[in-house]
Image (cartoon, rainbow, N blue to C red; front, side):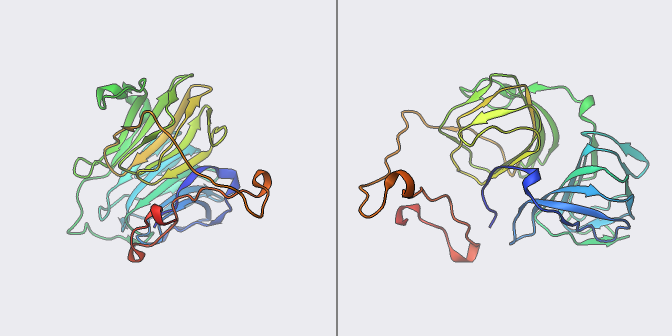
Length: 283
């Protein structure tokens, strides 16, 4: 039950008090995307004051990415674009964040619950990882996924070999383009860190966010500048291509002006799991 969010700029979200249980200090958050069934959240945090939280255990799979400012994890100072991943149920060290710092923060498959001083849970797997992308080489996507698209370049930040879930940086050279009819079997989420793209949804620059559920058609996209995104998917990202595409939708207006009052195609509606699957053919 997570809505399709297509190209919303961070400035258009409102601030809320941040949910960082056990912490001392003031922080606010913008809720870029939230799943109200399992608590999964994608958040932009800004720290009004210096902030600290003692060591403990998060309920959710937890990620932090430094947009600007600094965050100290244990005894390591993390600067711009450095990344921290804490698996669900795995103890994490004390964290301290300087006033004015901006972080991207994700909680997957769980809420903000945090047990200060807690022990590793029996179901936990994996360990805490910290990644400085400056120490990682860009690699062509064609090394991993074959297909007709021109290459993008990636720096892997986190990859779960059991589920295929990953978080990575992706760089596209200027002029890179994506066809109009393309979709994926997994969700695709990204935040623009640098550059600018043009698409059927409009131009997207730094601070633009998208959460696209699986099998949602997207494209056409073209980069107007070299562009870097941080992107997350809940499984292996396979490009599913359509050629000779067609769309047939419409009718004859009876009591309205089709130029100013015409109907719009329905997007995928937001439905909870217990409501059952939606059959678009019945719309």
